[in-house]
Length: 306
Image 1 (tube, rainbow, N blue to C red):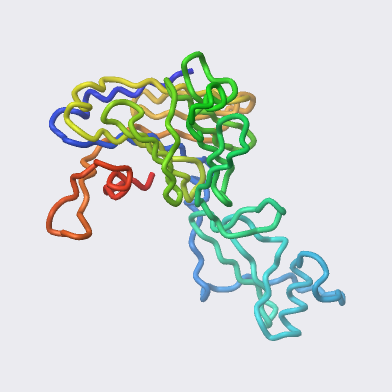
Image 2 (cartoon, one colour):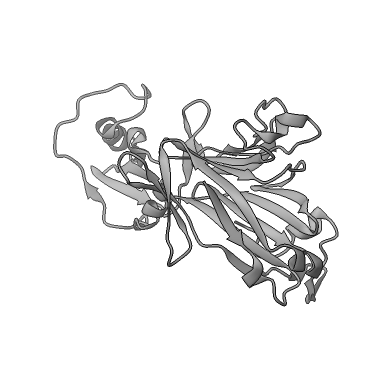
């Protein structure tokens, strides 16, 4: 399906506008409702059972092994097998357990299957054959962004793109792949941390993709001048997902992504927003930053965090 994003209500008097379409994973939203448990919170009582002797340092520690090591060393010990993206469980020397939970994912499995800190720093894989060569180092959920056409003909369009369109991004959500397509070709992006900027996708308009801390992606359009604001009336993005359906909320304008079999929500795409993104010039903080002459200038504008 396609999801039209009408820009005309947002382009009356502003010199530069950002339209954001954020793909937020349902898992991250659910996890955000969990309490952040401080280190000094009341500990959890461990099972009052005898702990068999287990040699230290063999495999991931379960609760019993961690409790034994904590008593032996007098230090808190991580219960490896209880680790999740959002929480860690520690065994204490006094036989209690301490749980530390965060609202946002703090770690993800790396390419070796080991827990490692979230790292959304983007890099370009020149060997990608499907055009989606921009990837984060260790994201909470798998996302891939377009590496741009780069003059390589069909390579930059991405597998399965509609005629005249380019696969812009893919994001994983609970075993489903959600795909965005862009109506045309894309330039090679300028990478800046977790952000990929595609300059001049339309005259006076830049496109920004952001790998989000909570998983998924943010999509922003930066309309850089009045001429572009007057010209751009509507843009249509393609959306598709394997084994999932999209449900439009007529009241909010957002989209829910539902598992086709269970009807459970696996992701959501909130309503588009617009704002004046003129920022402060770091060399002249009393003056707003208005220049969009280069990609570096655009990336300094406020609010472009996805």
